[in-house]
Amino acid sequence: MFSFFCLFKVKCLIRIAGLVLVMALGACSSDTSADNDVSLKGQWDSEWDGYIINDTTLEFIDDFGFAYKGDIKHINEFSSNSGVVIIQYTQFPSGNDQSKPYTAVYYRNLTAGTVQLANVINLGVFTSADTETLEEALAKFTLGQMANFVDWGVVQPYTRVN
Image (tube, rainbow, N blue to C red; front, side, top):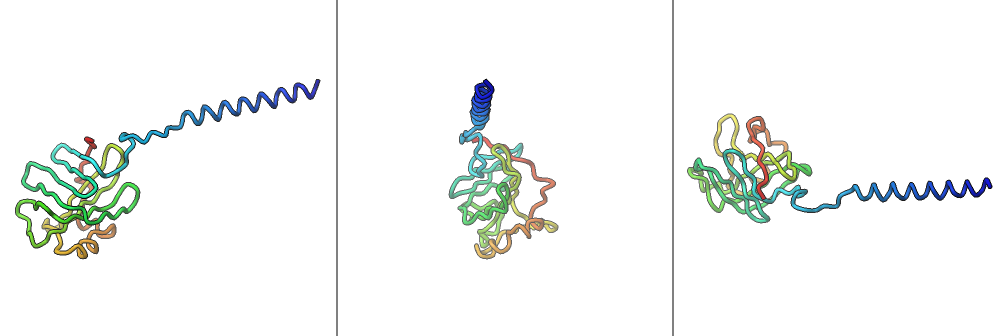
């Protein structure tokens, strides 16, 4: 009699453990849809301006004459949600020195739906931080130098449009 109840309890415990495991696995999501896309690629908008980023180009859109477009030459990821994109202008912002065709856009706090994006500028003197060569841009726009070009305190978050 004792062995029958013992065996019955063991079978029940195994079934309960199996049920708990099935329920736990069912609660896990393997959704890989665009809603969970933590990629910099896409269209990002704020109240004032926006970016369109794909595999090869980055475009900055605004209504104040500073819009530009460029070919992505390098992306340096500092972490899974921050980094810098270095581009070569294909369309310069109005008034920029066309002898300096390389610029950068820093990003941080990247999620599936929001990101902070910041065009570079020489802080303190508020002049263009653009460079003449890709090599200069790679050496200049680093994690360690970011504070010279970006004031995150004034950077609004951008929302993913698509």
